[in-house]
Image (cartoon, rainbow, N blue to C red; front, side, top):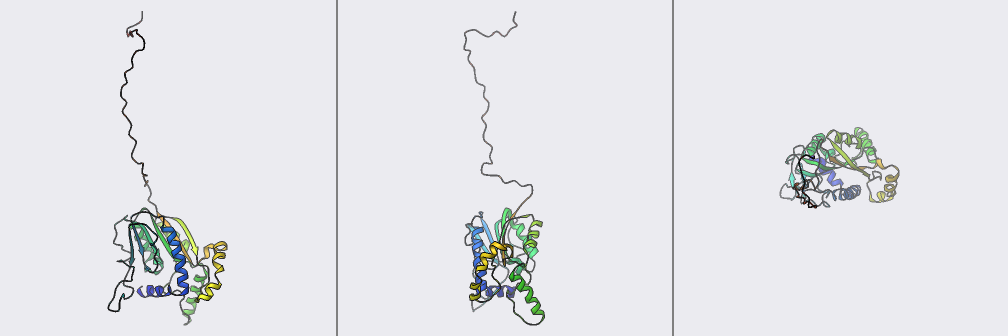
Length: 267
């Protein structure tokens, strides 16, 4: 997996890679700004600053191995990575994180189901997971299928290096539903075709506006926000303490008249 991540990180420096990063950064800045809590975690792709617009006091970026040398003198972690861990066995207690970002982590991982189950374990009830992934039902997905045919014939280069299996949007929703997640919002973007040069990307700039209007679900990438639901749980608001009720004390009543009350039997 190390070579796959390195290939995709290098691809992010190309014109289509920067085009994709710009769209994803805009989406993540919007969705994480209003997510409150104390602990947030991003799994993978440190080149994507997904938590920069979040205001939680504790934010981490995790990698699953040493992707590349940090200096010429020896190996080190990629800049921005503060935690080295297995995505299928996160070093966090159950129900300890408020927000988890998965920027293409499921597609690049060896066990996407295990990663998603682990995310469900470490999230608090009503915690959120944000997932970015490539959409196979898009022009980029079609190019990927065409590349596989060319690869069998012995020629052609990969447009998205390291991405072997794109996880479809509806397939991802099924996985989330099985883990008791509820999809809160979904966005699609990057409708331009899979071209490599900056000039050709500019020529197809009109397709972003047209695609968002006429074929919104066929964007090259999606961003899904899901909430962890726990059955039988009820969140208490700030006014959870019952109001104090004063004791009913006897109140003496004075007789207005001068006549005394006779309690005996009437004659």
